[in-house]
Length: 484
Ligand code: NOJ
Image 1 (cartoon, rainbow, N blue to C red):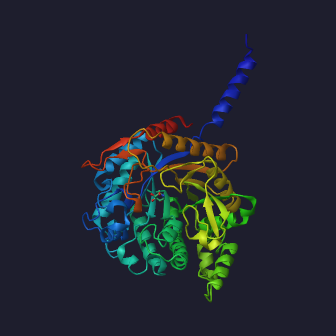
Image 2 (tube, rainbow, N blue to C red; image 1 turned 30 degrees about the horizontal axis):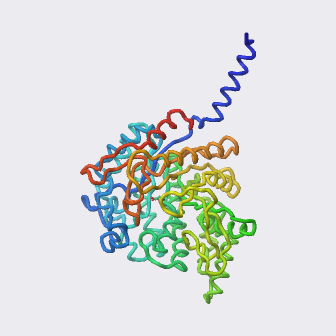
């Protein structure tokens, strides 16, 4: 017979083992969406026009099949169902964004829409009534057209226009919203926006990309400071910017230096000014050199004044990471080209590859390498110290219909597995995971072709019927059991 000591010991070993395999009790599991991708109601009540309304209506050929977000998932009307889904899943938070022109139809803070105010009040109150924390992104790619027509994020005045919007939003919702993101993915906004990949879908990879980088940071900083000074003392919320941190690893040893530059280009360009102050020196030097080589008399990356650099530094309360994939970096030889030649690649002289045996999601650049997420979390800590990290997006893209999404289940399981290792083994301060996305939606220039939803949406049904996929059921069970 087992002695009492042996029983107690086995029990202790067993419970430590269970604990090692479980997410911490206060770990937050959520799902995300963004206004233009789900809401529809593009001209409901007094809503003004955003740059996506303009692009999809004026140049439909730029979007897959001429799709628009005019109705999208109709969350403008179906928001109750969205809350119900979040509750079905057992989410602790739901990340969504605010449509600027639904709240401020003219773009300016001279007039606040009652309808816009009511829509978000209903959503926020409805979530809180189900114990689901709203995590609000103030701006997610849908700038008022009027501002884009005046240069958008390349115009220094955007700093004040955005800050005015942020102030209105705090005055309306800060009493109930504790988690804020100022601007979603500056890399997406600037680099994809000015490489023709998302609206405004213009082509200025050499110049606009860098102007936009400067003013997006100042706009974020101003909004953060308003919150910090005027609202945080009362409501104790947290705010940051969210980073589309494309993750790069070297293909070979000789590719290491340029890989570090790629990570500087895509992440530190925005992280360094916020967490450490000013542009990352190696990147600033590289762009300056390249600018001289191209015959410019100064760097195309506009410098910060001392005062601006100080103003941006420290404007975070946590780190928000959107992670999807990893690229292997290789020095480009001759005219070699690789997958997805984003702005940084020609600037740094590299091409991207995928690892041997990696599976790919629907877009050919989307390689699946879960370990990359853990490596990146370690890198973030190395760069910025023991900052609290919320994973604010992670998800799998396919282009097929159906509810049996085996690959997405596997993706979530494997990526969450790496998050667990980062928490338990590496002791990284990751406190949240947010699945992209709650339901199929308008995937920017890919329209409705590419799907990331854990709920399927029937875009032919009048009320955009939502049905859980296997991945939604799997995610709900992870949340319930707090283990994979
Ligand atoms: C990042 C963006 O924030 C989101 O809008 C987009 O749909 C997903 N990635 C997937 O591409």
